[in-house]
Length: 290
Image 1 (cartoon, rainbow, N blue to C red):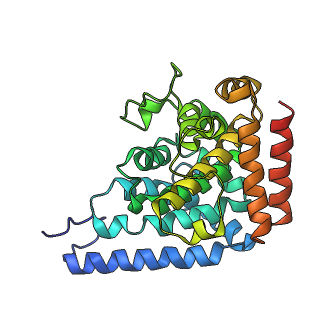
Image 2 (spheres, rainbow, N blue to C red):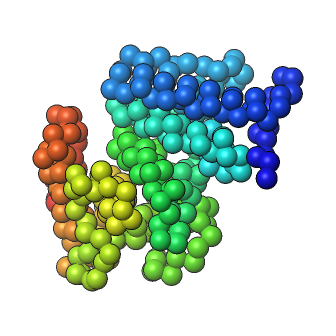
């Protein structure tokens, strides 16, 4: 069957071959942006402040990239969807150190599009391999934003589950059923703490990061979800108490252990910057004091 063509702008029409070529160019341009923004504060700052037009003060490049991610994920056009990984990688780099980018992105979304990717992966049959790489990039992006931007935390915590998932989610006991309830289930903290039979181990290892196995990918997803959950609740006493009630002993110890395990792993893998170490250590201490 012929690949569906993407909507074109006001330019002259092109045949499907040229459209495929355009997608190839877009994908490689995004990969160049990804390389240029990796741990490069000057390039990140330039892109952060780049305006695409002069309407309403001008939309900025980070907002455009986020809207493109949501469009790519929902698209039936294979070539356009194949650009999704590269788009998310750029956003991950932009939010790694920049609070400004996090603020721009938070003002551009209600997070339902990103949350839907996590939900689709979690509820997919056998945790689809095609979604596993994407979901880890999305969770990394959400972690960056939750860590650095208060508005992002507020929006995520108040996001109703019916905005990003059509699944019944019977495992969620809360009447509200919001994103915090959902990400707690994805992290599987309650099951791990109670010693129930799980398919995976909570600890992330170097082998898992290099592995394409379903169990390894699921463990990474669970760990990232635990880190995200920790950032979402750390400054909210009510949320902390609510999550603690769901855990054995009514404490946040399983969550603390998950964050500590991740910190230890990054230290062992020599993949931890001093700033990241300080942030995670501070997060651990904040959860312990709850």
